[in-house]
Length: 236
Ligand SMILES: Nc1ncnc2c1ncn2[C@@H]1O[C@H](COP(=O)(O)OP(=O)(O)OP(=O)(O)O)[C@@H](O)[C@H]1O
Ligand SMILES: [Mg+2]
Image 1: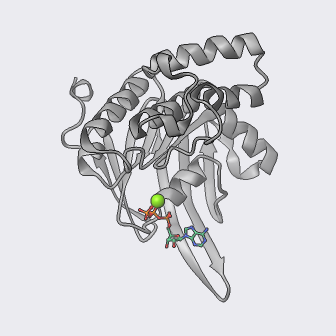
Image 2: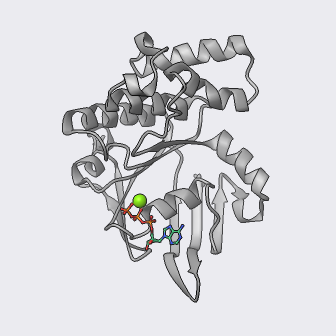
């Protein structure tokens, strides 16, 4: 089976005046469809940079990136944006919801960009709200929701376009332990339904529910191994 994501010696250098920061150095990584991968490492080790490059939010300085057989480095910015909308859903630590838009409107936005009709959008958003257990909260603003509920809206929004991959950067970083477990169960369910999951975390308990842990240090992969605990399903 070919990899969904395959990078070879991917690097990202940020030039800052005379000096430059090597945020990613020679990262060669393969991820198959349906995998659940945790990305760990100290602050500044390149975790977010890696997720951003893999998610086509940022372009590498050198190296190659094949996504589902497409050479991403050969694409224009607008082709990259189209690919990003079709293939990825993003979830962030601070939820990144539009503050003046309701839960419904936040989830609807990617569907508007993708050209869905009003009726189809209404049906899809209702389905997504139900999937994340928020059917009673459609018309609430983010400020009227708890942190865990806001993150569930963000997850529903990430799922709207039926992405192949969910990229989550510290999705539980602003949540307490029990809410964090709820969010992780939800992400695991989504993964079990076939969506590939790449998740950055500082928290070993969070990383342990993923099947594979990639560790970065100073922009390099220093280990890539199955997680020791892992979900029960992964052991079968
Ligand atoms: N836009 C930028 N311009 C210049 N340097 C940057 C930029 N973004 C990140 N860096 C640098 O690249 C390195 C990797 O940053 P990155 O945000 O990927 O780390 P991280 O592992 O996600 O850290 P954290 O755990 O704190 O979120 C850091 O040294 C950082 O200072
Ligand atoms: Mg980061």
